[in-house]
Image (cartoon, one colour):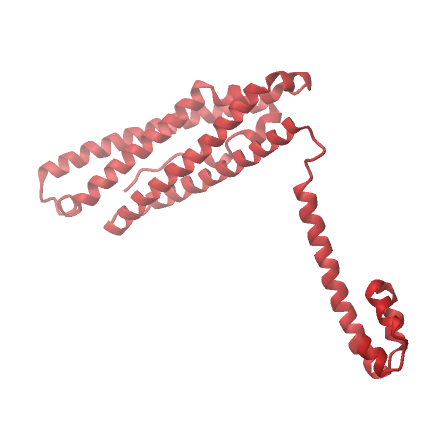
Length: 259
């Protein structure tokens, strides 16, 4: 701007005004030479657009960061725990879907090893979800009086849901399923040739035993899953406000048997 003012013999303070107050830029462009108006106008539009987008982005980030600041500390913490619980639940859902997809594929050594590794990762995902549930339950229990005073008794129902014997049995059945599935896969991985080529009756007998345990674990988990779904649906009908804190619908599918 200073160079343009000098070249056009224009007052130098114009550049300072343009720098301090961008609203004067159109006037500066209008007073410039005809050949430079288009270039200056385009530069102005680009800079103005960049600044506008930047301001909108910064405002959105700040708004998202401080959107809960007006709420009481207890309410803010409850929202944070809910977000963590929802995210870990979604991660668990995705992992269970992936495990189901892997269970549909005919076994081979590479697939066996891949599934064994994935089960270990899934266990960590389950642990993260259980930690999120535990901190939510403990938090709700610690501030029960606060929620009662604020007419938010339904929040305490979250603790009752996750402490219910059906929900706990469902979780234990899932852990039992993973244990038996991994045991079967590891046995098959170590004795792949003996099993596939039927070279040893002992290995085949052991395979049948491990497979039956695995199958019973699948059936058991599917039964508990049905009970948990029925209980959860009834629970949400009685306490609809708790829906955002419950396991998602993606956990309603029954496991298929590994081939």
